Image (cartoon, rainbow, N blue to C red; front, side):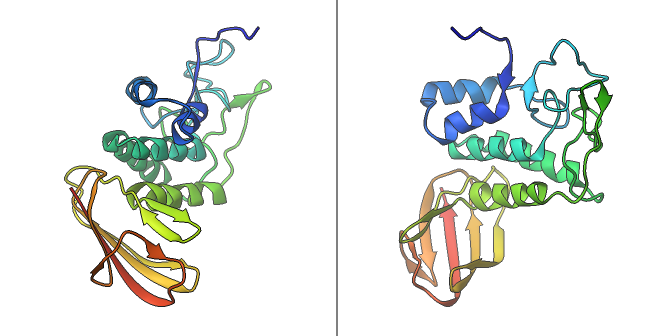
Length: 216
């Protein structure tokens, strides 16, 4: 029998939402109660006994961009645009002008590999997964790209007062897209491809195309 542990694991909770394991009530409780440190959600909370605020564990209470973005994606999918925006802002703030590091201190926001095996580890720079996780949060969260065999559907999650947002030069198969989203929320009121109302962007198109989504 598995022992109960008083810890929450952010990546697992986010994946439970994304894959539909958590029902609506459970997803709402997860969104409302998952802990966030000053610089973002962390891998596992609270600190394990051998670590603490001065020595956060490498895979414990540290900010890993990959985990943060999966959490943000989960928040977008259940319509918690406030927590989605919170995470997107946390990532942009962490990255700043210093590049894309592997892991960050949850309180200071500085690159910090955390503690493991009795020593502090480095946070490696120029991490591809940190770059792609931010792109994923924009593509799959803010603009809501959902790739299917027949093409792309859209399920954006736009925070209130965000204003109009445009994703330009997006390459998909043999086409290049300019996607513009206006309004806020998660309900698509109008979906137009090159000015014509549609419900799917076909995978067979080629060349340049304009997509405009209006949210209610």
